[in-house]
Length: 258
Image (cartoon, rainbow, N blue to C red; front, side, top):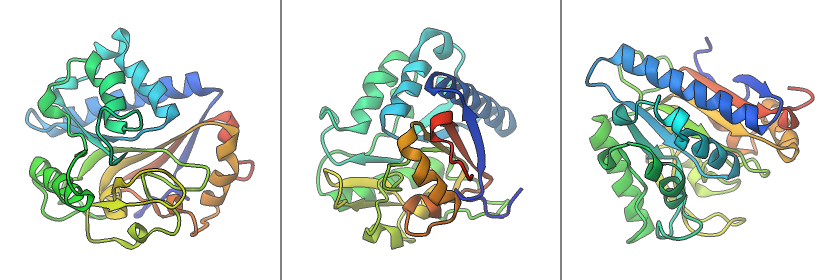
């Protein structure tokens, strides 16, 4: 295992199409949850941060289906967010609202286990409030780094996507947030996408035990090839994790030279 797993070196899991892709990832998340809970004891929850996007929406719909929902340990899982547009949760562009409608409204997860990003007040203050929530719920004062075996992870799983411009979470090219290695959560305003955003920063994502990218479609192929070639102009290239970084993708997104 690499001492510093990154997006450029992480394993590639390739599936014939989106249907097979989301089914495989759903089963993988279930296995990770069961393993974490078995290893951690009765008081240890499974912590996962979720992203928005069209392909993750198919995953969440599958997880909400009765056959899957009856198997997942909802009561012992804490759900966080990777990023969100700073709009009311009732807004069509809200990731938090999407998660509530597609997933949380259909499964037996306690409301106290759901930690959506704030959707009101000043964005910078909202980012500080969400970081305070992460600190309170996890009990962490400092973030673990790769190779640290004594500090528990911030998250067990951080689920990411990637845009056709190489952004991930709300870490867009050329933004000041890319150099923020102090805060766990930050507000940002992308030049190429609508809305102010709240996002986990690089160090918060890197404090996750398992980082998983979910990408699909031929329009992601060229960008993924650039990440694998360690193109440092792309925000996704700088992503790392504590134990592993894994790409779950369909065949259409598979780079020819990965």
